[in-house]
Image (cartoon, rainbow, N blue to C red; front, side):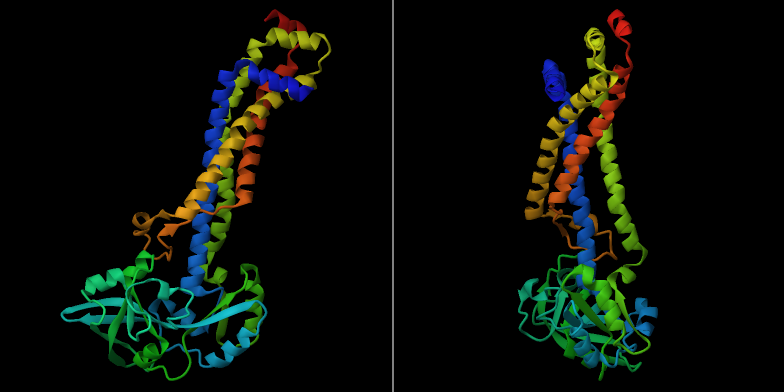
Length: 401
């Protein structure tokens, strides 16, 4: 009966209730959009970092880790084949990729530019190179380079390029390879500075006769990463490390985990600010109904019942705006998840971040549910402020005002 009474009171001034609910609607919609957007951006960064740079676990030498910013090709993992076979049998390990990164000078006619190369299995890499060819063919041996790098060198498919770099033996070596494909990697830094060659060509250029520089291990599920890394570490010799992607991201991983909670707090703050309208509405309702409050208290209503009544009124208004707002925000996120949002212009300045240009906000039932819960709880808490005032009114005092 108390709920029915509160609901009828909400309908007494429908225009004011509608405008108040509209403020909550907008706040809840923003919360739903923000959660999907922020979670999508953080998830995209983590997924791209794993796929393009570290794997779930990366196996390499400590010497390579210490000198990684120089992209050393002489810090070799000599027992790579044995480690690959044994690591593949570790529970949770789905795939292992061998990759060799190196800095290089690329020459074509009178143009010479510095770039970064990567030797890998072009056909089966997790980076999906075969799906990102916009000109040429993945079936041919040669160089596959980012579209912006190709434009800078003024090369096209079929042109020969001279690759010159320092080898694992400390000397210099150069080979010529044809441009087999132009790629749109979907990541600005990769389109501008990266190219890819088959492992055999990379080893021939770098004179790597045995071993490799890095092995990237991919697990079935993210939660298996730590256990897989611990098991692999027992299989590898001293001086070799099996590092999880969390270790390699470093403090940024903890920062991203903290950011998820911080944004929930910010979203609650947005709803709280929107809920000031609820406080204003309920105070107006109380002052308009002072005689009614006095009468109710005179016939036996308790302070607690009046407090609950006005709290319920605020909660109902919050729910009327918050639930549709959260659902609407969820709907927008669902549409953006399918269509994607092009962030190329915004990401161009983030040179060191391997983030794909197309963001698909995270669509999650729990995101929608948390937005609904926040949009109901926060207005209810806001309504308690005027409800407490109403509950403390004395009957005679209320009837006199």
